[in-house]
Image (cartoon, rainbow, N blue to C red; front, side, top):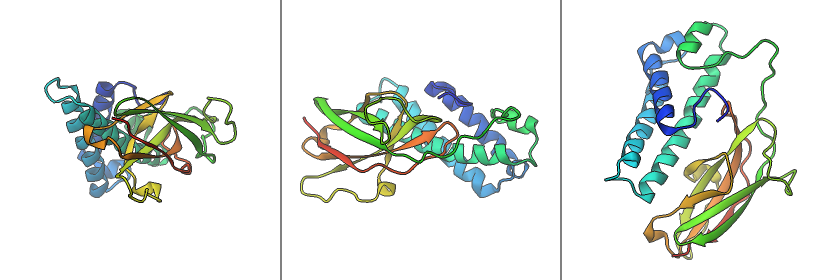
Length: 223
């Protein structure tokens, strides 16, 4: 990600631990309440535990890595929300913001608005228990470029058994990850064979602002 958050999982863990630790110690200093600190801490802990399992050769599986990706994506949505609230709070000093690992915007820099367009998804199956997702912007379907200010696509994935009604509300579908490059590969556990993968995507900016959800794309999972 091309903002204050690093790319590698280990570096992300260090960053979010620092962010959570300082806020948990003195939430009022950042314009927050203890309940906010608890929300942040819970999201960080879930990612921390999932990452520990994902990097351990003895516990690393396709399902464990997918769970880690989902926990990371959910955590980043939560932390970006609070990070941007803190950055915009003029009552918090720049020094305090820098302590959290935030960048201070330069004078005259304009804020990037929330995305107004939606991704158009295309899903393909090329290996057993895995699918690849490609995406375009709805206004430029012939180009692979993301809209201005967008750093990636937040992807939500549900698995529907044969004959089941696909989910209608993207808000009820678990977030699988954030795709910053494409094609983006989605892995499934062995018991997903023969079921249908249902996908929704929305653009997300480097500051955590999200756009509207796409229409659903779906494809049966090959074994």
